[in-house]
Image (tube, rainbow, N blue to C red; front, side, top):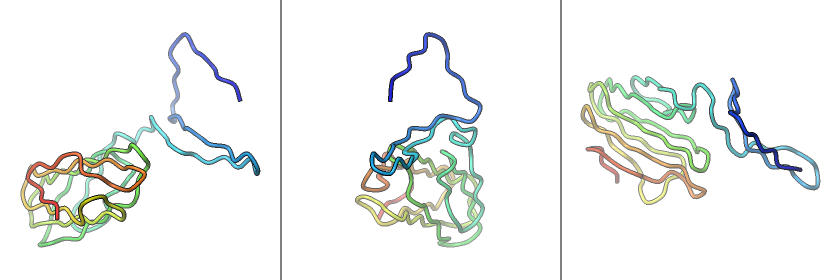
Length: 133
């Protein structure tokens, strides 16, 4: 495969993908995607449920006590920001694969967690009021 060099802007309506090709089978696997309209989008999550890995930001509205939140595995280098925006109780986030923590608890408006996904799982970059255990 060859390299291509552009002297002007490169544009895409549907994002860009990095792929790997299996040298034996020729199968193409997408290893990362960038630039999709939803990559930097916002998920509005009300109550318990799944924090998505499609959008960078999740605006969390709690509607009861100790609501269970889940977070699936992401793609290496992916950032996820979760901010508690409406307080109707508390929420406990449990990512599928995590590094150095088990859960993150949100109890008040303005609390947030910034996470990055690595080859080993989700790692905490920063917490603002939220508590990791």
